[in-house]
Amino acid sequence: KRGHSPAVVGNMAAKAALACWRTCESFHHEHIPSSVVSQWQAAVAEAMVYNEAAPDHVIVAVKDLAISSGMSSSESSLSTARIATRAIVDHHLLQGRDHGSTASIAKSIARLCGLEDHKASVVSADVVCKSMINTMGNIDDVSLAQNALRAVLATGLTTEEAANITGRAIAQPMAERLIREGVDTSSVVLRLTDAVTACGTAVEAANITG
Image (cartoon, rainbow, N blue to C red; front, side):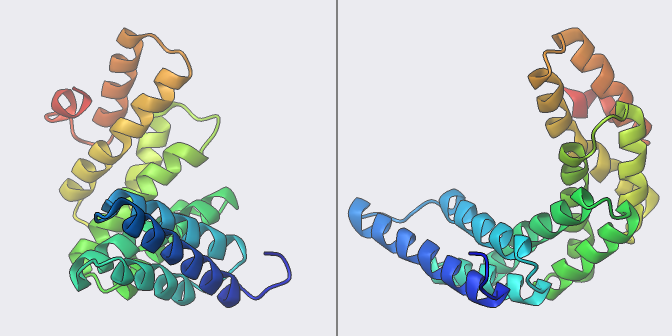
């Protein structure tokens, strides 16, 4: 919706998504799965971030949709933190912003969504890692893992926590990317193990890779 203010776009998108949800619910005579609600939340967040809405506007629109769909207060806070943070982090990284400062911003956004400090660190760390996998181009697996670890440390987690969260967060999206690129199974396992080990999780590397 070019030409409209970010707040108007977000409001329109939230209303449209909520109308879809209510229509589907009445049509199917059952509760719409949270995964479907999450897709609509993500669409609202991406539309608003694309239109350069302020983070607090994004949070309000995404959270309103979560609450309207029947989520509890704690569920809506967590859902909003993951989805709003991901949309904003993706946008920042695609613009070439610094990973560490982006991770700090992600934590601030998660806190604004209502998460306590440590949970905000964990959620923002997970989001930043997954976003880095999808937005960083020509870089080897180990360097990507090390960059991700440095970004995660900027959220305030301890070295041990950061290593574990980074290893687990990068594993699946990295494996999926390698498989999409046509890398053979043995090479996927070896490259993934090297990347996860580079996060400082040598003991858990085999379990995480598995």
